[in-house]
Amino acid sequence: MQFLLENQKKELFDTFFESGNFCIVVVDHNGNVSYINESYCRFLEVEKHDAIGRHVTEVIENTRMHLVVESGKEEMADLQYIKGNYMIANRIPLYADGQMVGAFGMVLFRDTEEWLKMNSHIRELLLELKAYRSQKHESNGASYSLHHIISRSPVLEQLKDKTKQIAPTDVSVLIRGESGTGKELFAHSIHHLSERSSRPFVKVNCAAIPEHLLESELFGYQEGAFTGAKKGGKPGKFQMADGGTIFLDEIGDMPMSAQVKILRVLQEGEVEAVGAVQPQKVDVRIIASTHQPLEKLIAEQRFREDLFYRINVVQFHVPSLRQRTEDIPLLAKSLLLKITDRIGKRVEDFRDEVYESLMEYHWPGNVRELENAIEAAAHLTNSEEIQMRDLPEYIQPHSYQWEEDLSLKEILDQTEKRVIEKTLQKANGDKIKAAELLGIGKSSLYDKTKKYNL
Ligand SMILES: Nc1ncnc2c1ncn2[C@@H]1O[C@H](COP(=O)(O)OP(=O)(O)OP(=O)(O)O)[C@@H](O)[C@H]1O
Image (cartoon, rainbow, N blue to C red; front, top):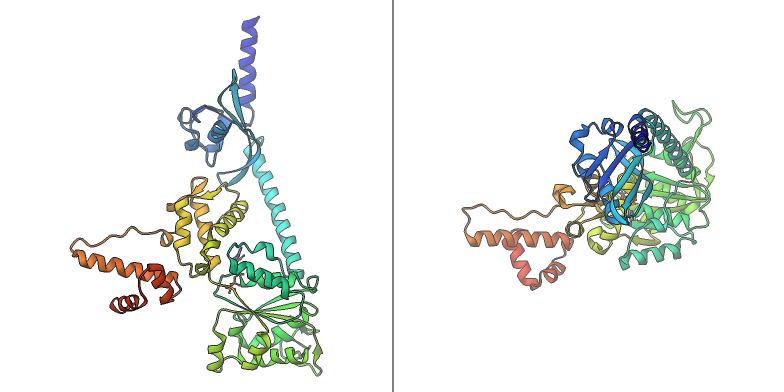
């Protein structure tokens, strides 16, 4: 009788674990695979005899089974990315006589075909959701607010305070700063916190619209204004933004002819569509941004001084990332979480030395470049913590190699030149600051930059 039960148990075990379409794995207390069923092997494209005895991380992509053995904590319905798909996994620690002996893992889907169908169904739903979200975004236009601006530097905190102060007023704002520093985030935030938040936020990328189309894009046209004009005419961006905010991105790139018209809107509060007989009243708040030195453009007669004074009522200057390195760790972590959430990969942090390198690099493309570098590293990494080798090469600190036939003096000169060069980049070309960072006198730094032609 006892023998029969044992046999039935084995049969039951085989029926359940082997003939079903479940993917099952069991690891021992060291995280080595002690059992894996055929379905899982087929899915992973591994041979069962090769998998058994190997550490689970060598067999299953992004697995956490070994971590469950370490922590003793079960993980239910956890999202795992394997072979280009999202899987849902349960991981349960196994105890015998009160001792942890391993862990049991199961991927929750009946067969890969079904999962693929389900996965594409979910993907479709996610795409739909994204489309609805972007429709909502387009209908209002401003999707970010202050809590999306990640920072800890006093200078950005002050800018956030300033945003709260000026948002409810109707003053024009000019946001300056290098490309990728977050100027658009501030423009969205100002709109969000203003009385106009339920009305449209319309962005105009002044650098992207060809000069001959700019006028009709901004102010619209009447039916029959020119050959090819749409029946019924077309409203311009200013009409679309009526009651709300218009964001003139890269205003420094706007042609002089359009600048005159913008000035008129600001002065008179009215726009004139191409081919229209009557001007039309509009009520818009203007936020403009630029990375260009407008004062220099004015001196070169490429930007109208009167327009500058009109838009420059309140000025925001968003500093470059290298001028607020204290923001980098927090930003990097938050961008990493945003990215891994999107790509469905479990990467939780950066190694300490990676944080250090991120803070050392000079980020000419600012937060946008940081975001791209982190995205690349998140895709490349094989572990839960981004390591130095996962970073794009140009960010990794290079161990200095010198040519063998150089004299010691030449090697020291080259090293000194590199250090000064890097420090000057870090100090944004400010020699006084660079001298301070290097702990040398101002005149000594001037001599050295002259010597090395920097
Ligand atoms: N403080 C921040 N916190 C979180 N994300 C940020 C921050 N600053 C910038 N970003 C992100 O960096 C990217 C660039 O930001 P944004 O487009 O606002 O920069 P910009 O200064 O307007 O650039 P450009 O002048 O090239 O238009 C965006 O993806 C934005 O979400």
